[in-house]
Amino acid sequence: MKKLKFIVFSIFLVFGSFSTINAQVERNSELFKILKSKDSLLFKIGFNTCDISQFKNLMSEDFEFYHDKSGVLNSKEAFIKVMENGLCAKTNPYKARRELIAGSMKIYPLYNNNELYGAIQNGNHRFFESFEGNETAGNIAKFSHLWIIENKQWHVKRILSFDHQMP
Image 1 (cartoon, helix red, strand yellow):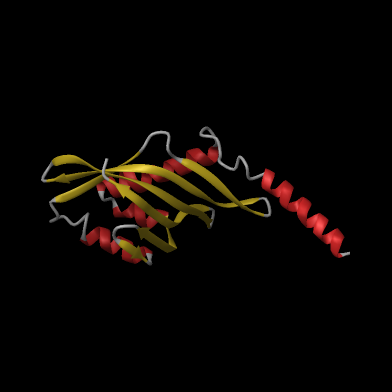
Image 2 (cartoon, one colour):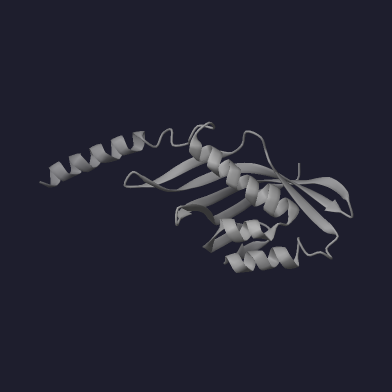
């Protein structure tokens, strides 16, 4: 009996691993387009123009942000507060802009019993810094975002921003 269980388990592992070889979705897939749109709302509108409402709409209530240079923010509220009082403060002469590096974004769907419940978005992005209107190229970094479907809506639950390097 133990031998039969081992054989069945081994077959499951082998065939299960084949299904993950090409786990990244195609760029023309609906999932890729949805998360590229969410990325645009989060960064092109939210981050780049300091539209805080985008963070409120797109972030999970159980949000966490991990940054290799500035540490951890353990909640949606903490992240929004940092943005409102820091980068997006009206009196702050420093501004930042983020661009997704073309072709770098990859999406990996997450399933539970064949039902899509989330996705991992990986890619590279470049930041630009502006002080009193003079913009200069900043660092390039890698990112991973965990997107989860909550109440039939996509929300970013975890953000990891790492490997920040000056070009």
